[in-house]
Length: 92
Image (cartoon, rainbow, N blue to C red):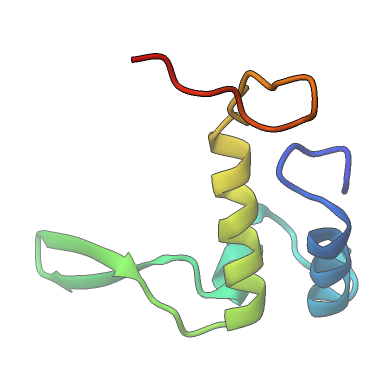
């Protein structure tokens, strides 16, 4: 799991401990439903409205997956460094 960008040691350990056997989920939709990261729905007749995530599943798992997704989405910023390892002063 640590080969995925955004997943480090703590995230991988949390996923394994919270999920147990990941093979029990047939697809990603079932896994996300278990974590509660699926959209809420308010449907009536022909009208379908989807809202925010339901937050009904495993909150710890949902938080870790969302943090990993943000880490995957945002590349690390490269900051110029001085010789001693501190940030370089900003130029006016």
